[in-house]
Image 1 (cartoon, one colour):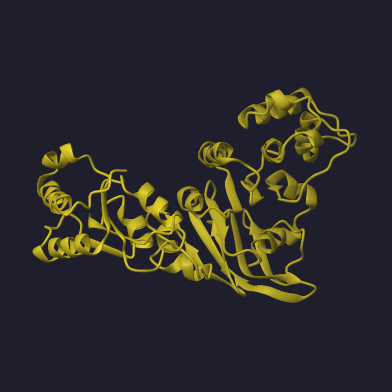
Image 2 (tube, helix red, strand yellow; image 1 turned 180 degrees about the horizontal axis):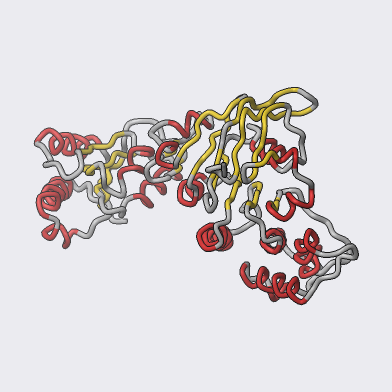
Length: 372
């Protein structure tokens, strides 16, 4: 009977020199799915990947590829089904970038490693796919780390695998190439039914691209499931044992620690207009309060993380007299009031705009409006 999953592990235990590091790993993906490992540095993500690709011998358990135990498969057979991109820097001697990509065809070439016309077409197509055709004749050792990473991806694609394994593939890429790199991976998973297993440090990207996420913590897989099952409130700070700052699972907001102390400034904001100001006040070491904000407002996650106090109401709920009164008390307490919304727009914002205008007028009468 054909296995439902293209890749799966059964009781996999990994480690070094016979000493278990992570035990009883049970993960699986179907064809065309993307699985991402996340977790703190040193948690064992790379060890799991190296054990999957047989660079390390598992201490226990089994790894299955297309229903067959990988222990029963030859190296050549695995190379035609699975390709690998690790963070370890490759240092080929006297090879152009095209030469490096071409090595991805070696599982298919004859004894002398000669490339056929078809092989060369696949090499060229792979380089075009990751936008490195202009690097073809460049010395591989003389290009940037980001360019090398794209060359190695082209090499992996050139192998025409069913499964690709990548260890922190975006580590040496700027934001433009991070997104481009992952977009290519996602496109391959959709159009070529390519299965992908990788580790990522960028949690926001992991949550967006992955079908399944594996959380590695201590000596075990702590959680395994869809991004929606993984990114629940409070879990990521717990997984990474965060002691400073905050992470909001819903928005992906990562913020530094709030400035402690009584608020010196009240920020009236909304619609995402206040987040930049909140961060500026934090950088300048000024404790502030924020509000009145609906809890689904774009400014709310950063306000909750950075403000010493946030006056908030449930999404689309009416603002009560108690919340309005607390805002006026903060105006009395603070030395200044900043508003990130244009005063002339208050009249277009319904009840919320009317209350903001009342608070603006109240602060203005006390001479507390601060012009940005």
